[in-house]
Length: 207
Image (cartoon, rainbow, N blue to C red; front, side, top):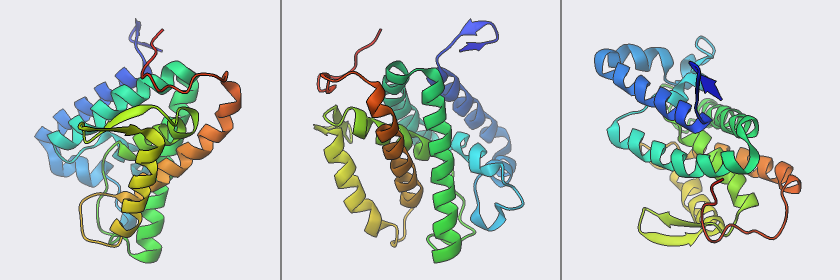
């Protein structure tokens, strides 16, 4: 995609937007959070936060972890399915993650409806959910230390995340699971468009 006359991948554009949003947080953190973070109790008054919350991050560690994950998994999926499909999966999956967060909060109190949610992780989980179907044996480093197939990670994360939703904490597992589920269904949809024979177990294939 072309941005200001320069060819950039969607992943590069999203990362740049998230970094710029974080820089703005330094100058006007309260304004950014109140205006652009997702809060279930006010989502009907600020529906745009279902999307804008994907660009806001809580701190530098949150931003770095999400952007590193987006760089590797996003580029992989972008080069596999193309820019338009990647953007569709990223933003629709991220939107579904936001809706999942709002739904569980408003109807089940998980978490309290006044609790803000920020971060790109719901959309990134959608990307990973798609890859779980398309490249299940892709080896990842869990916590940057432990190698395992992507499908094993997805199973383990789901087992941990479901009960964790009911416990105090700062991680929006309900949004993550929503994104992962959306990505899974997108993976099923696009699996037929790929040629068989490459399970991705040897890592990235750039072109």
